[in-house]
Image (cartoon, rainbow, N blue to C red):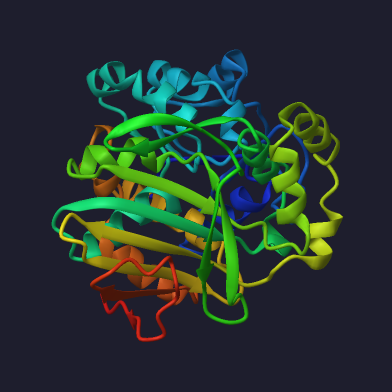
Amino acid sequence: MSRRIVVIGGTGLFGGAAVELLRAEGMAPLVAARSAARDGGSPSNLRLDADAPAALRAALLPGDIVLDAAGPFQERSAALVETALEVGCDVVDLSDSLEHFLKIDALRGRIDAKGVRVLTSCSSVTTLLAALVRASGAKEPARVSVYLSPASKVTTTAGTGGSLRHSLGQPIRILRGGKMVPARGWRESRPFLMPQPIGRARGYLMESVHAATLPRIFPTLRDADFWVDSRVPGVNSLFRLLALAPALAARVSRGMRRSTWVARTLGSVAGGMLVEIEEASGTVTQARVFAPRRSYLAAVAPAVLAVRAIASGRFSERGLVPHDRQVDRDEMFGYLRRLGIECAFGVSTEPQGMQYDPRLKKEDP
């Protein structure tokens, strides 16, 4: 593994987690960030802004593998990928943003022609999600609904707050009837049930990248939505009220940008993702990813595995890589298990309203 690995945003929570996992795999990534370490991340080796083309051109070298963890991606440009095309770097990012995916997708022709590797949204949504849909056995998925219960005591950061700011009462897009249609973030909700200690919870509608990425993998998909629970007592109700007044929500969320103490004090340690996969026949498969602690590693595991495969010369794909070909499915499930993160599946003949089925069986890759 002689190629240089650069983790941009490596001083933050998710970037720091990626650095930790890469080092555990025997790699020696360089940590790049705009500022010193925060949220428990690693100290930076390089001061680097992912949206500053001149600085990127000065810092990156041909052949570099860049793991981009510099969120919030809703506020990012495509400068890093455009610079990687000039320099000749591979890029793997953790983006959860639909808008950011569309910006990268617009560069598809140049990416494919250049022959570098770009793995965008190589995270729990969409890469892990695509693997879960494949593993479910659904032949013609018509609907994929995702519910996220974050480990908010740990994962509440400026980056995750940025994702929320761009959905709270704001215009969002979801997949309905095979088309992207407008909605308002956090104004709709649904109940769901997870294992203890999470138990009963309620998810609120937010925008997600999988509304655009999954239909390219599964052409039968007609509906895709994403529901999130803050996992902080009282905050769901507050956000629901703020979503009715977007202008006020924008001011409040900006004021809360650096105030994470409430979530860090009262938030959940356990976390996970529950997925409902419905076929046209009405058969519904539930897939669950859950961990009592450090569940957020599921968000960085696909990117770590992809970087490892590229660095070791085992990754044959080039261009803008489809999400179902970014990581080997069985390798990913086995890796998550070693990290203490459980993947399980169960089947029902009718939609379950995202209830947790205790009969779900663990995936055995």
